[in-house]
Length: 310
Image (cartoon, rainbow, N blue to C red; front, side, top):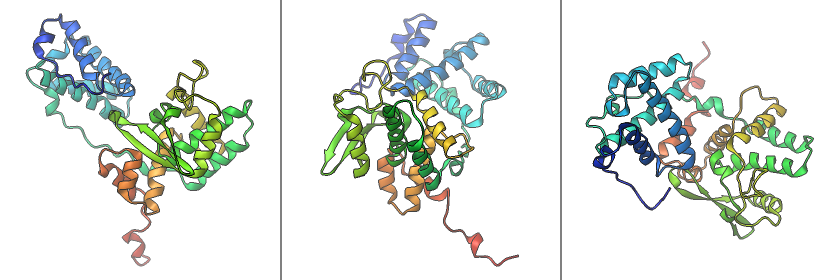
């Protein structure tokens, strides 16, 4: 991926390829400037869609609105949840829009499909301060075979909550992303769309991270995998069990994931009156409307409380 180059492919180039090869090349061009984590997900969504089309004897170039509707029904019949189906369909719409802009297809059937807004129920994915404190304190008291692993798990919990990081941002951190600032320091995070942002950390967390670093080189990952001598990151799927184990220790019955800690960061800050633009900047939201949503998910007051008892 070349972040400084925006490829604008021409339809004529694709038209010279065999249909199957042209379709594969189109998908490669569509993905080329997206983050690696997004590429993996979108490639899976595209494969599902092109596989569905192949099952009815069609190729991407001949997609119709009916095909898209039938694909959404196919996903529903597979038992996928509405938010997941929406994610799939949004990816397909993006691919078809790209195909139209390149001249690969003459009309964009995705433009006729309007996706319904799904209630993500953020309020159900927010932990209380007590929940988070219990997750951390009981992890501190848990019995680990290796002390270093326990410290790692604690720092993962704290960074996801205190810094409001996405799990992809967490595992991608290297020590070169850390910059001292007086008695504390900041981290440079590469988020969605390869956009960088800087997050100033509280002094206590900065000290804990520097103690954890030891003599690790600047190019080493903060949370490395067991293989690669620090030069390979911990896999995203290996972070979720750390969070789930901490939640179980705290007696939480919900299926708590990494993103719950990020939601909690935004919600707790909104409740404490932290300026919305500052929360937006820290979390890396492209649209302030996304950040503003956290203000309303757990209101401290409502007109319902001001009515007489009936």
